Image (cartoon, rainbow, N blue to C red; front, side, top):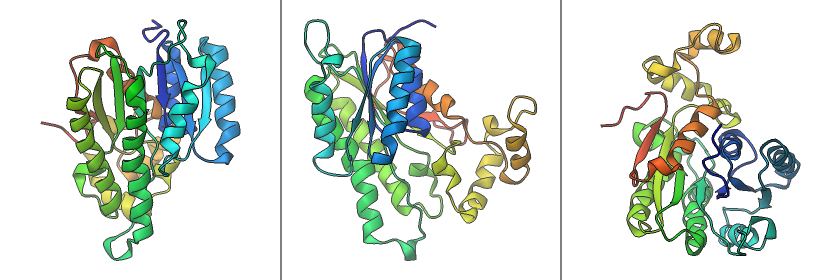
Length: 284
């Protein structure tokens, strides 16, 4: 595989599992050095193992950094810790962030009468304020030749009005609005795009309530790429599709779209919400 990101530095938040881990792995395969952002102490051994594995397999540098992006100081700490790592400096001793993937997020589903101020506060701190402060802290270290790339992980929930997602859908709509603003403000430094996955085969998706899964079955029924393929998809997913309507995306399928958007050939794409949901939501 061509190492099109050789020598570039990518910061991936929420890199300990799921989509974040898949994105970090994909970028490593094409040569990017990595900052693997994570939040909880329980994730530390997972991320440290991932870093060692990616370094040995792909001859890149991978540095795990713990920072709570739901706090005011956490995002700045993430960036400044990365800057202080000698392993991530360029040969001339400078520090540059070529790629930033704002992936970390939380999903707390509740119907309108059950939403609490605490749920709202946590969701907006992690899903909206977190990416804002990370991007703000990263801005001084972005390239000056438009070669930088920022990818924000949104969701089709920003547009579909799914039940239980007043708060989650709202956070992702806010992230998409910020994406468009940053695309203008940072245009001489980088492109800024969002992607909007639907259901993805992760722990987060598995934790959704049966009522929520019944709600989205009709959407899945009409999503072209969610139709299962016996002999290709696992028998478990094929069997589950009889009641769920189809299969979720694999994390690698989401990571592949991120990889397309951070490459040199994506230089004329900015301020967009790029479909990453198998056709569940068809953009105009």
